[in-house]
Length: 129
Image 1 (cartoon, rainbow, N blue to C red):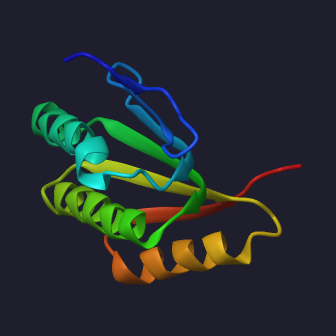
Image 2: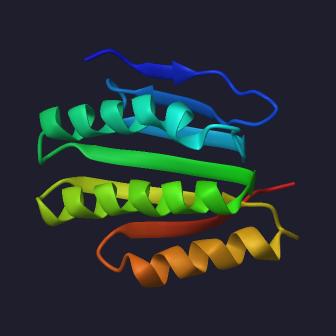
Image 3: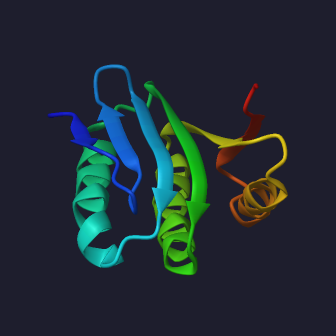
């Protein structure tokens, strides 16, 4: 399976999924004009990736979103739902929710995601310096 790489823009995050290392990074801001169009290939890739993933492989997902709008938060819920379902099916997935020290809003979103997705391992990681 090929890696997925989408460069960041002013309105969209960088998305980098490395199949060999099993590391998925989503970094930046997310408020695309057409959210369905932007995230459709990401979801398609993710579902194919999870399907071919072996149960003994560990996957790390680093989510470092500086800003995201309400439409993006709904997409994040769908994304985390797919991941939690994969964990229920025996996959080993950890999510690092990375936030700036003074960004209380992003921290609170991470805490809410922890509550909503109890089976999924969501780590709150404060970004250094």
